[in-house]
Length: 109
Image: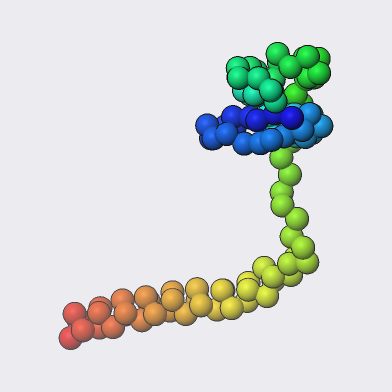
């Protein structure tokens, strides 16, 4: 069992060796993460833990690797909003034009 220092500088644990392996595979901890093995008083990096010395963290994702979030059935939401949005936009344009026409008519009179 281990205690760890998280990226936020706080102490967490106890954490099992299997949990550390999983977190390494998920990229949640890396070889520089500080751990305190049970029964010791000295904090060491994960790279110094014999059982994890050969473990390598996953490579960082490539810049184009991120995917858009799934829409979960909201594909037609934009279609449902599109009509009313266009209607409101047309009304706003007509209101601006009406104001301009009224102002010009008053200025001409």
